Image 1 (tube, rainbow, N blue to C red):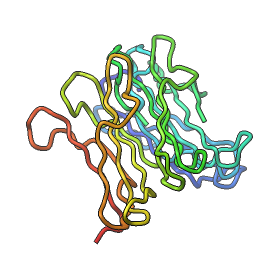
Image 2: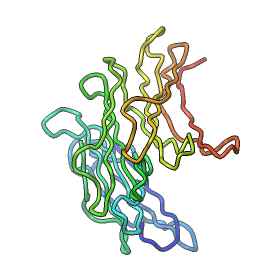
Image 3: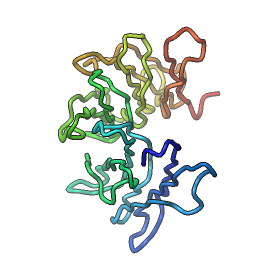
Length: 248
């Protein structure tokens, strides 16, 4: 985050209290030749009761192209006109570390889905309009776009689409990052069997429809956690992992 050549660590504490119950806090510990710092070098709080600031936390890549990594912090219980609408906030890195205030906010790091050299950000809203939605924001020299450049939905009430979102790496080897979205409440032949969706990147951004889907054959909450697995079989293509919490 501060460009010193050492990796840093960010930690979320979504039930932290400091004047507000469960407002949440995020902590950054900077790396050095002797390891991580003992005390946090940066903190930020939700400043709203039950905001649950700090779940999740992740690198956002370098969304403004200044050579410093940025971070994204979620606050799933944040209210602003709607109850529990949630918010995602990006803090820009700099030589002195992370900024005190969020540089961008929207009501997870997919990589660079349109190949323009700037990292992009994907945000999930699993209870949006009762079915869930995922939003993509493109990075640029001025930072992240203020309005979403891409959205996707499951088309099924209660599917929790967007409950987990992640980069999938470049699964087809075309040079563009792809993303994977989980919908653990999706129902087909079984209630809450879950589904995972893959959207492929291109020069114009993410595909409007999923290029691949997978689901469980039982009520297992398939897709509650999705992520890239790297290249597990060494064929030069990125692979993906999902977690079903209740499958037996």
